[in-house]
Amino acid sequence: MAFRDGPFENIKVPLVWTAAVTVVVAAVGCVLLLLSDARAQTSPYQPVRAGVETVVGPVGGVFAAPVRWFGHASDYVGGYFFAVSENRRLKRELAELQPWRDQAIALKNVNARYEAMLGIRSEPPVAMRTARSISDTRGPFSNARLIDVGAARGVKVGNPVINEHGLVGRVVGTSSNVSRILLLTDVASKTPVLVDRTDARALLAGDGSGNPRLEFVRGVGSIQAGDRILSSGDGGGFPRGVPIGVAARGIDGSWRVKLFSDRGAIDYVRVMLFEDFGQLIDADDLNAPPLAALDTLSDATPAQTAAITDSAARRAAARPSAPGGSE
Amino acid sequence: MRRPVAVRVVGPMQWIVYPALIAVAATIVLQTPVELFGLQLPEPVIPMVLAFAWPLIRPSVLAPLVLAALGLLLDVLTWGPLGLWGLTFLVIYSVVLISRSFLAGQDTAVLFVWYAACCALAFVLAYVVMAIVAGTPASLIAVFLQVLPTLLLFPFAHRLIERFEDGDVRFR
Image (cartoon, rainbow over all chains, first blue to last red; front, side, top):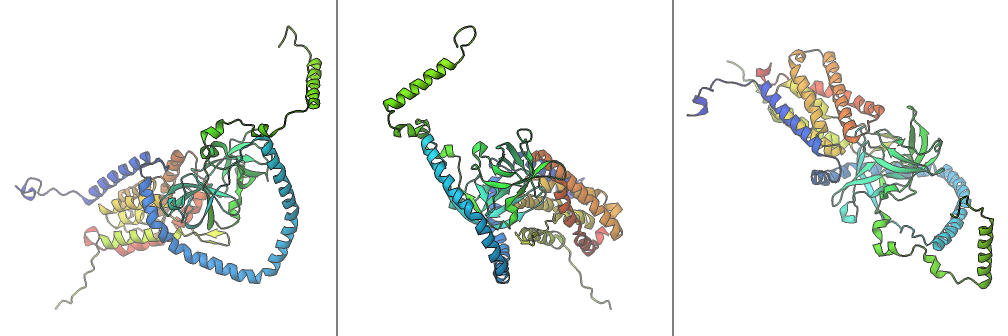
């Protein structure tokens, strides 16, 4: 017997009900997705995201290209109109920077000598990949960008991203030719930082606004308006010392950071192919004697030995004896 | 003799699929990294227009499914947690569906007030969900800067309702 001929022949479900059932089923699916997705590399849906971004990335690139061309053209024209004032400004900056350059060269020399004496293994130079921004998300719940380099050029999840002014964010997803950057302003972004003046540690937490918050600032009075904020390198996610911005009080009274990367458009960026220094060298090298420069020192002369012995004897004689017996 | 009358066929392609594709295209275009004099393109939540207009046009089984798909695509495009916008759109769809009998045939000003209320509800929901997921509540100023352009999309929702509300005599 066909369904139409049966006792349910005249039953009609209102369309509103069927729509409501569909809404409930779809909403349950969305809730399950929310519970199972963590927006992290460990998310089971990461390949799906990567697949969609692989398709959408080139489309975004098509729209971004004319914008970039227009920007280049306006820069080219503006260069003629503002050449004189620009030239004066650059000369003034050059005059200000020349003493700094001399100091930097001298400090670099001294620093290299200290490193050799102490046997410090400094971090190797970090390779970089230049990329163009092809898509931009700016909402309160997400601040991310797509760039046009991916795993095919060595980009990995976790790589820091900078522009000419400072740190922009880090890579959170890659496909072969497209990568997703999470900006410092995203609500999910947490970056360990330090205050350059006091070496105090803090955590830079994005909240969707243009100026991320400084949380867990260590120490009393360790920060003041105008302090430079750098990446601390704690945890190994970022190299130490990448410029991030300057500290400022927000309208809510919290410490915030005016980002250096906001000084210009984030259209061209550089991906630092950075990995934690500890992962880059062999374990045997880490276990080697730390004071490598000790091998290069010559033996002490008899005069030096006598001076050291005499100095040690004087210190021992001057030390007050501990009450109640020897230490 | 009766004159022949042109029959306008209004199927799901016209009032669901094409607007959904336009919403996707507009979302991708507005994600173009443009910065002019320090200002960037606005980033409204464009499918909100559809979540408000579709249940007013007529109840449908396809519309909530397409809304969920649009929400998921928006989550991927904006790198949000999967399900955030899908759930939000479905909540708005169900609220408007329930209040459909009150809203049908209302004045434009009344519809705008309802649209604004739906936007507020959607952003409150998204705000709470994101605060739980990310552990950091988003800046209210940033939320306002996205609510505002979303509200300005109301003329598109109104146009969609006007265009398709009477498309099928069974739902008059």
